[in-house]
Structure formats: C-alpha cells, structure tokens
Length: 470
Image (cartoon, rainbow, N blue to C red):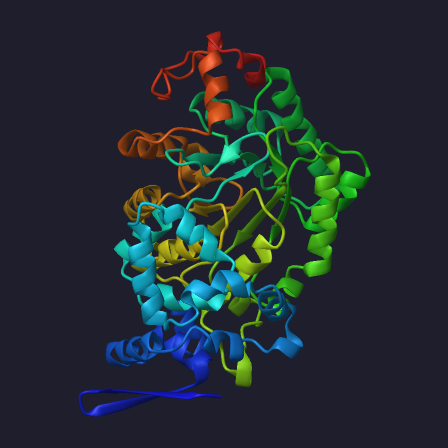
C-alpha cells in the first residue's frame, strides 16, 4: 500500500493508501463523516486533492480500492478494462486527466474523443478526477459526452430531455394511477418510461400494473416503455409467466456486499438481462434494463469497507455501481440523489454537488444517465435547491428526470420534480422530448412545431378514456 504525503504550509498530511486519499479528497458530505473517513478540515481536504492530482492513473489498476479476491464488482471492473481505450490517457495523472477532459470537451470532435476513452477509464478514475473538478467542469465535460439508448423511444440525443412519468399511488389504485398517467401524458411527460413503484412486492400486483400500462400504450399507440419497479427476481418470474414486461428494474450498488443486501449479484442480473432481451419488445432498440443507484447505499448496508478494512467514500462506491450498470447495456440509469436522507447528503449544497458528480461519472463511463432530483423532508433542502440542480443537469446534458404529480410522491413520501418542472427545463434550455414520443404528441395536436406542449382540454383529448367516468 502506497502512503501519500502532502505538505501545506508548516503541516504535512499523510494518507494511508488510495482509499484514504480518495476519501479525504472528497467534497464535504455527511455520509463520509458518518463512516469516519472524511477530511477533518478544509486544509486536509485541499492537501488530499493536491496529492490526488499527482497520482498516476495506472495506480488504480494496480491498487484496488475494494479487494479483487473478495469482491465481484472489482473483478468485473479490472477484468473488463479496455487497455486499448486507456492508451491515450495511460501516461496521465489524475490532474492530467482533468486537463485532458476539459480540452477534449471543447474540441470539434469532443463526443468521439470522450466516447473512445470511456471503456479505458475505471469508476475509481472517474471518481478521482471528479474530486478535482468544480461544478462547471463537471457540467462542461458531461455535456460534451453523448450517450444514447433506445427501446421504443431514443434517449440521450443532443437537444433532447426525457422524463420518467412516475404515477405512484399508496394503494396501487388503478384509477389513481390512471389519472396520474393521463395528467403526465397531457404535459408531454413519459418519453423515458412510465414507471411505477408498487406499494407491495406482490407478483400479482406487479402484473396488474404492467397490464394497466400496456393496455394504455396499446390503446393509444404510445411510443413509450413501461416498468414496474419491483425486485428483479419478481420480474424474471413475471416474464416466465408471459406478462408483457418491457424493462427490467433493479437497484444496484458498488460492492458485492451492498448488492447482496439488495438480493442480487451479477449472475442474477445476467439472468434478468437475458430474459428481457429474449422478449424483443423494443421497436427502435434493444436496451431493456433500468437501474437506480444512490450515494450512501453501500454505507447504509454496512458494505462500504475497502482495502485494509478502511471505509471507502460514498461517491467512489457510487461510481463503482456504474460499472455494474454498463455491463448490462441499460436503457436508463439514474441516481436517486437525495432520497437516502441527510445522514448521507445533509443539505441542498451536498445534494447538488452529488447530483453533478454522479451524472458526470456515469456519462464519462458511457451510461445513459438521468437523475431523480429529490430530497426527503428531514433534509436541510427545499424546492429551490432542486430547481438549481434541475437546471444545472439540464445544462449538463442529463438524459432524463422524474415527472411526478406536484413533485410530491404520495407513496414514497419524498419530494422530486413535477410535470411543470420538466416543461420549465425544456422551455428555458430549448430542449425537446424524445423524437418518437414528440411525433406522437404532434399527431394528437398536443405540441406545437417547436415541441412545446399546448394547453389541452382533457375532455377533448384522445386520452380522455383514461380518466374514467366523470
């Protein structure tokens, strides 16, 4: 294990290996303080960042943050590393990579350069360089990265901004869910996915919800995909039973132990991937997986220890989850950035920074990345903080966000973004829905030539049957 030292003024700071250095270099957050790995002062944090800037990228290939022998995520990262893609940056330090990324992001062939190097970067490299970057750096580089995926709609195209229509209901009442779907569609939402968090993990309840969305989709010929966010093993069973599953969902994390706490491992995810692909239900693409992540998930599961038994910082572990995601060619990935609570991201400032870090790292690693711009009611955050993060992510080229009635999820009990928020970002930043979905909206007179949603009378809408008896 390499010991790193950095002198600042009259003080020399010592960091015991990469795990300690990465943790101390992280911007302040409550989860790292809870884990006992955070810098004790701004001076120590700055010293760690200076030391990290001089670490060669090759060190991350030689010194695993989580032991190779005991963690299948580490084995996936190192065994799938693309040496040819790594070659253009192999001689760089972490600080040199930051400079390279900023130069590449403004080059005429920015998208091609960044795409070419993606498979050569490990999650730990991405996390390390993000710790040296200002918010504007994270935004600039992420915007230059172009990652697209497709099922019935194409996600992530330049100038496009999609939404997950999230019509959750505390009792899975079909009328309540249908009303929320109708409301969201009339606001031009749902082009990423119509995705429901069920109130229970009952296979029958999940099947009923999938049939509900599929009936709406087929009846109105909507180019959208559905997902009921139940456990992956439940969805595999539904596929075997002939239920019309579009996307397979699973929460994932950055260590084998944390994934085990979710009841999954790589072999189970591979089984789900194969099952979803076998259905061949996509029309414009074959990406059929949907993953959610979030900083702090490994710590909350007690599965956050790395080499030498030291706690790994939550942002580095979050980036490692993206290696799991990209192995299965997902349609959608999003960080539920403020959902776990203030124990991990204390306030609006920490949530905003974490959202930009997650989006940057995931896109740099080649994922179609979205974000649930959210917070819990006991965090030191409010909707103004979410407006800030939402706007910054829109500028950064985020693929999609959540669209929830009134921004208030009445089933999960947290605050996110609303149908109106999605329209705000599209209008202010000149963004449009996915092209296939926009064409459907246009056929029904729901958007104008610029892709802007028109005022619609639900009584005159082709979707009025969703509302049920009046």
